[in-house]
Amino acid sequence: MMETQRLGNSDLEITPVGFGSWAIGGAGWEWGWGPQDDAESIAAIRTALEMGVNWIDTAAVYGLGRSEKIVARALEGISPRPYVFTKCERTWDEQGNVGGRLKADSVRRECEDSLRRLGVDVIDLYQVHWPQPDEDIEEGWTAMAKLKEEGKVRHIGVSNFNVQQMRRAQAIAPITSLQPPYSLIHREIEQEILPYVAEQGIGVIAYSPMCSGMLTGAMTRERIETLPDSDWRKTAGDFIEPQLSRNIELVERVKKIAARHGRSPGEVAVAWVLGNPSVTGAIVGARRPEQVRGVFGAAEFRLTPEEIA
Figure 1 (cartoon, rainbow, N blue to C red):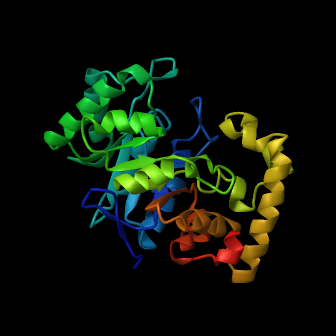
Figure 2 (cartoon, rainbow, N blue to C red):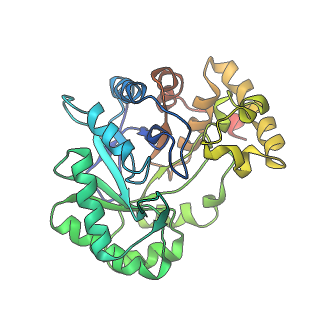
């Protein structure tokens, strides 16, 4: 069994890694990861649960509802059911154009839609995906607090918020958790955000600990060139120059440490994120069962201070 840690002010005891379901939303939308086989997605989720993972993080917008539906299918007949975390605020129109909405009626409707797609009576953690539009944060967070009071969601959190935005939300209702990007490549949250959440007792579930696959060790220049055009990473900053050369050099270092321990580079990258005491858990995405088996062992793995340095 994986050890667990309490998430912020909640009663949720979560494993160090959770299953991230952005990529299993597949292609056909702005932030897709290319074609995806639903049967493989379901097998990947079930493999993670067999390894002891007890939470799944998804969002309505992943695959424009597809990811939530796949999570529901993967959980059919599973008992005890893992915690299911999802998000609102990213909405889309009939053409698939994605935008931010935090009006109260939208938050409520999105919650009802997610409950239906996920096939659950209550969402364990409901999160505001992005703080956009900024001027509607108060209205959106008030609606989130109301959903919690009504028992539609058990806990409420935020994602991609800065300290100022978290303060504004906290003036209305407590925040259970923050979901920020955090990896060896993206350490921006170390300056202000992590000290703030630690002081406030807000849980942290870090996303993209492997920097969207860059730190798995499988990402080469050749592989990036052959990514399908429907994969958003093809034109993302971390995957093109000038950052690409620096990132590939970092991956070589990660590979050396991994080899020393008989671990995968992805496990080293995730263990690095989990080494920060402010981080409660890391969201690890996977598209196939073998990816799960290659990375989720990071839950028990710890790096030495010298390796971290």
